[in-house]
Amino acid sequence: MAAISVIVPCYNRALLVRTAIESVIRQDFLDWELITVDDGSDDQTFDVLKQYAAADRRIRAFRTENEGVSAARNFGAAQSGSLVKYLFFLDSDDELEPNALRQISDYLDQHPEVGLVGCQFQDITADGRRLGTGERSRWAPGKIFPRKLPNEEAETPFAVFFCGTGQGPFAMYRKNVFEKTTGWETAFSAHEDTDMFCQMALLSKVHFLPDRLYLKRAHPEQLVKKSGLIEAGYAKFRQKWDNFPSRTAEEATALENANRYYYSLHRPCRDLKVAAKALREFSSNWRYSSLCWSLKLFSSAARGFLGYGRPMQATNNRIR
Image (cartoon, rainbow, N blue to C red; front, side):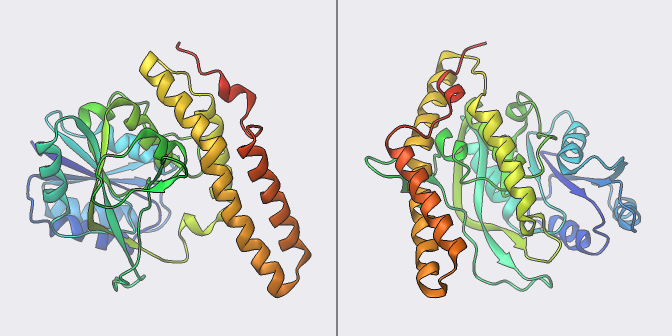
């Protein structure tokens, strides 16, 4: 039985999924299993997965109806071996550095109180060329203003993820903690990783490594290019977590503190930053839309700082 299950959901990735799979095969940590899930592709993706499964007994290929990436991840996690300790969800268009599984699993071995470990990433081009760019930022409550957590500060509080920062596919999950969550949220078009990080952070500690162990590929088909879906996904995330029913007194405190911080400081500061940018754009292009957007954001920031930006239902987290 393997120590780590790497789960790769894919849809119409006949070409790129090869590089994802090869990056797992090249790992200097050998105690893994690779679970690939074809989410109802209409190209040759499943044929590619079956080829790799036939060549390496550590690789398994599954095919499901097209229900989205979250459903495919949940299905893959359910196929994980009973003795597996850790899960890693690898996007089918990305790659891992050869030492990624060893380094992150070693950290989890040494820190049993930690349920989720993330890392930094590096951007790569469609053909795999490293760009030397890419950074996952984590913004946490500071003494006065939000502060960006430095790389050397591993522990990451729940409020970071509640505010929609610090998330991403660059993480390894302790399986027995992941199994206490409700799984990947299938109702979101995006920000399902933000939701999962929030779930994990309520159940255990979340830490980060400064090493760039994940290679994130930029290409035209990426969901992150579809801003409408991102906005819709974030709206659903906000609705869920602004009204999340706490199960313990500790969760109620964490949710209340994160909610107050987000609406009274984090979001107003973010609105101010974006409003200033829009105002600079207006000064250079004189577009009326830039001015309107800037004024709207300044107003939103003011309401937040004055305590009027918080939804009514967000002030009433209850233990259920």
